[in-house]
Amino acid sequence: MKLIVGIGNPEEQYKDTRHNIGFMFLDYVAKKVESNSFELDKNSNALVSKSKIDKTPVVFAKPLSYVNKSGDVVGKLAKMYKVKPQDVIIVQDDLDIEFGSFKNSFNKNSGGHKGIESIIKALKTKEFYRLRIGIAVKALHKARQQSENQRDEFVQDFVLSKFSKNDQDTVDQMFKEIYERLLMLLKQ
View 1 (tube, rainbow, N blue to C red):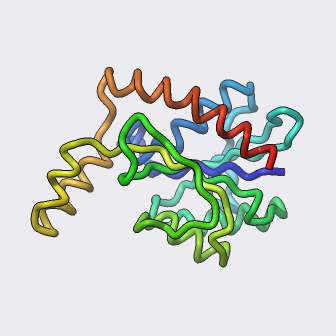
View 2 (cartoon, helix red, strand yellow; view 1 turned 60 degrees about the horizontal axis):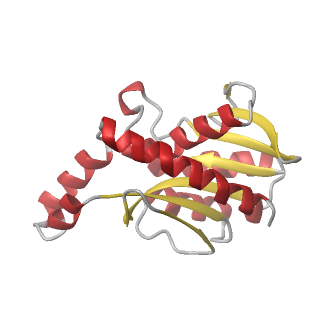
């Protein structure tokens, strides 16, 4: 069994924001594989859906904690479903990857992503997979040259902003490619 966790913020105001691209991807995959609908699992504090992808049983999960506290939920889900860290795939936004691109990684540091830091702490290892979806744009590079306060304010506003129509077209194309990568990860 594989545990596939999208990272995002649970409240309606964050729906379809850059920080919630992990949730958006899970919705895409669940629809594609005709998974049952997401239901609240109170024990883990997540919306959960179960399915199979190419005969591999999968649990999709969207933590109802904020991004920075994702580890609490991932730890509970891994125990509940008896999933080893190597069978966990985290889908996250990544400010170090250009928008329109993505990478997968295994056994890597958090790169400063607070949600990933909390997952590493909860699983007591970095040995899990990540699908890192790029959300970086040119304006972000400029913001990194500003004062720390200005930069932090820009980053917070940016990750909590919604995608434009043009951006959404790019997201849709990316999701098709990321799904193919997910299929490869499921075979490992």
